[in-house]
Length: 500
Ligand code: AHR
Image (tube, rainbow, N blue to C red; front, side, top):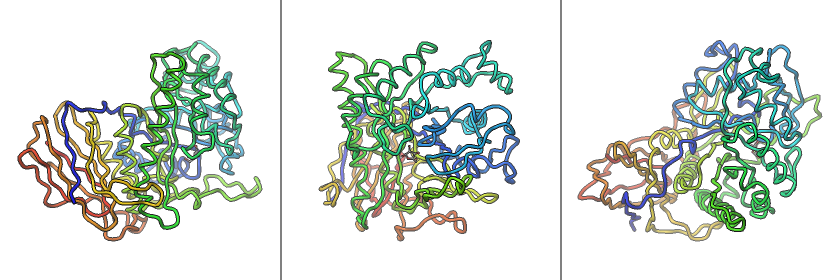
């Protein structure tokens, strides 16, 4: 059986906000130290940034970069990371049971983001800190000068304000693991107070309230409703976090993970709109899916050891991704694009070494994981307007999600050139999937490229020794004829088909 859908520019979902291709740098394991920052590395620039990593980050095409956590931020003092490096304190990081040297902080991060071609998304500590410290950081970072904190920044050698526009009001405050974890009512109040105070200084900031750490949280939906009841008029987005892994060898369910992602998005949007209706508000809250990825949760927890043993930049959460993981990640990207009308920011968690598309060795090379490829392709060609894709697809049954389509797909039209890129995943582990796409009113004449990520070994990965083991390859037989695109999607594959 063949999977089919129709594309027509009259039926569009939304423009893609470029920040949908964001990522995340946390002080966790080796994401910062020996990841993006390693003075003394042969490729390090004058600021200690690894230029080999920077090159890959630019190729990956990340936009908004969230920082400095994550769980880390809920115990973090931003002041520790500014000013002369030799005077910065060493601290215990309770979130990841590590020792933080603070050699990397705001100025280093801002330099990294600038060189990477992204924009900063700054997370505030609302776990152990509150309104006052948020205002202080805002003044230090964004005020031009003439006040104590802005002048302190200038004295630290940074004349121009960072002008950070996008701020997260804390991190995963619904999670009992979070330092300073709160109830929804407590957090809602704090988010509202913080947002109100920040807006007194700058009404145009973009603010993200913490939603749930996952759809399976016991407090899910009630959390969003309570929080938004407090801060609906004061914030722009609510956050979503989701991680997926293969459980008990159930690969079919794992390959269908995006079913959860899409329902999560739809449920959060419905909850936001419910609160909006209750408040008789015309405003719409958007979604910031600011942590998402495949994460083999049980592989990477930091061991429980006494604080005297907490290492600097230990190896934590260094998942080595397979072809299967890359296909799932591609499907998660498709889920985000399919909901581009609501998801305005999304951050692949994380960027380097820690559940990341890029791996490095200290003093050694940096290379692309399998998951690098779907992200880079989507970021490069998934800009423009998402077209409505309603597939008529053969289905199969999964343990976790019941009946699911074998085809998961979206399409994005570049409004300038008129080119359309189809992103598609075949969820079948063993059968190729014939695809037929009827094209209406798009003026497309040919297939510029059909690139596939698939492999006869579903567990193949890229390693230090073999960094190019898994890369996309061209498909054969894909054709556009008489207004119909015909292709065959390899078993368990990620596909990008560019039509011009
Ligand atoms: O990205 C890893 C961790 O996952 C983050 O620190 C936290 O926010 C989430 O639980």
